[in-house]
Image 1 (cartoon, rainbow, N blue to C red):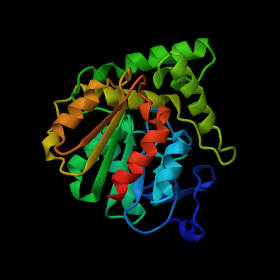
Image 2: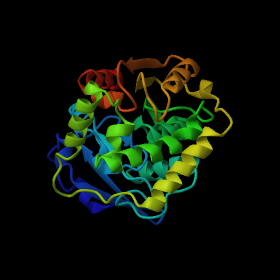
Image 3: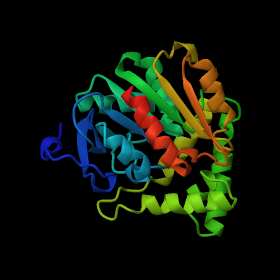
Length: 288
């Protein structure tokens, strides 16, 4: 394990100041950041399609890190992590477990968004004892309705964003109405608050591999979600074009005892648009 992990005992409380660290496991160097008080069950964040360490909203991370040990990471082949992105969600889950165990943890909470939520579901199915609590946002189950159309929507919105010189997330994550446009701009600005030690962007080949894995997940046989006995919080906007909002309701129906929150007049990035409401909800859920 990398010796610099415990080099600083002072607690980092703001994500923009969290140093990027590395740990080597099974020949892969994983890049990660951590903040918040050590001890207790850490919260490991699973990021979305085409994203790296810099894509987490500090207005979600920082409130959680005020109470919990938070870890964000680049999975294999993503950002500054080495290796190649695997071709299936299940293999991505295996890599995530390799990373978590390399840091010495045998129990974690998982906070996931979009593709990260698919990886989290695959992980819980195969390694149920590793997880205590699960937060699934902007995501859907294997074999979910229209899940295999994510790629088409993604490419279309990337084109729209290119034509208007915008960040694709402004189209993919938010409604294109007055409220959504303001929320989108604010979100993109928050992601730029960290000015030093920025992560490496995802390579195009890695992005395409992720999209193919999502398509395969969407066309797979429906998973048996009744096997998930973990406390689970599910959240989304009411107009998610990327991973249809009905899939959040589907997850809620099939995961016994799960909690569901759907935010009005918002899309895939509903939790970021409503971060002032959602962050305290997530903190409360993890603290219970």
